[in-house]
Image 1 (cartoon, rainbow, N blue to C red):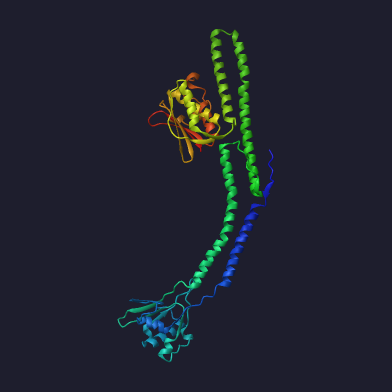
Image 2: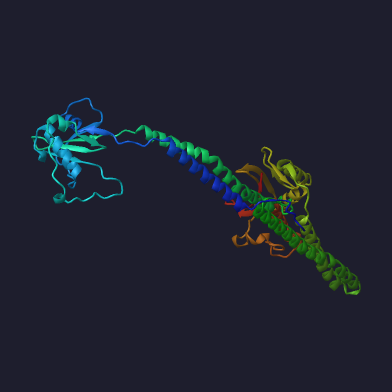
Length: 443
């Protein structure tokens, strides 16, 4: 089978690379525009007089917070702090030892160490007013030791300045500008992956489903073509195996017929025993051909109501005197092949009737799954045989009597139909006795 790549486009990695370059370019353009638009922030200026008024408890300045503490940690000496402390002491009229000032250390930097001997001692301001007019740049913490020995501490209160709001809104606008490109990139990457997930799910439900469309970037087109080739190979493999088994089973009928003719001259007791074996072999051949036909035949799938299908099966069996009941309920719609699902339900009910004498059928829908349960009140199945009952030709009834034990293909055929529809079939022993066969099908 040949797949054409007429719809393949440019490679996916080139598309992703191009979108990433566009995103980076847009971000850089926004940052460049921010660099031009925003004004350089200036440090706030204070005077020694403002700090002194705050230390003395004068109200009216919201730029400072005042507290009283037992101790105050002094910073290492620096020229700026010494000059400001001398001016504050002059303005307050107290010894310089009772005044301290500290400045915030820049983030991720160390406080610079100064050599006191190499820096000239600053001069005290000429007057109190000159001292009050000394400028303090930026944030600071000033402390004054009161007469009771406690420290009066004044700290600048910095609000969220207008330029910070501008930068914050600019970052939000930049993210909004880049978001469409990021969304397009994520969509381009996720869409092919989602398509492959849907195709894998569809292949599990229906191996004969239509191939994936060969379109999109070259990598996706190549992967889709490989997936389609894998699906075709799997179908050919299954078909070849089924054809070989079916041909062998069909051709066995000819030697069996010749054996029957040759037994005409045999003694009665030998002829009757051999004819019984021949009938058993013919029944097995018929059951095998029927199993292959049910599991390989691809019928048309369309939406159908499982309850109507179950009512048809149970009503037909009830008309023939079989003790089978169907629990009431609403419609349960699935997409499937009606003859195959009907044969599956028929196998499960007949299996329950054969081993338990009666069957109870119920249908429900939960979590996107259609549930079909067939219960009986029979002896159940030994725990070690719960998985083996689905093996072809395995019979839980050990007498080897075909009239009571069957051929051993009913449950295998039923599970094959359920799995071909994307579901499954499991059986379990009921706590109150009997067996429960539960079929799950996607709604």
